[in-house]
Image (tube, rainbow, N blue to C red):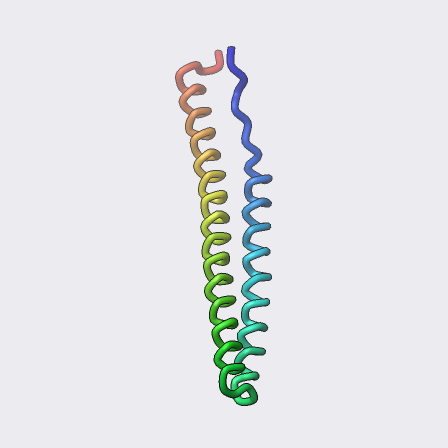
Length: 102
């Protein structure tokens, strides 16, 4: 006989929250870096200014891609936990209805 599947829904919610927290921290760092880059615009001229703006744009692009991925992972974990809980609950009701207590 195979072993029953067990899923820790609370653990899944905690893991999803960790991804949300990491994403929030990254968003905060991104805002700080963008503010710093914006403050440098008036002082950096020529190639230095262009290079600094290009670096900030690359960082912003990479950070935003990571934020999107972290959000997607969090949403999938939340969704999987909810689906598992619903399926488990529905299955329990079906079994209880099929084999009522005597």
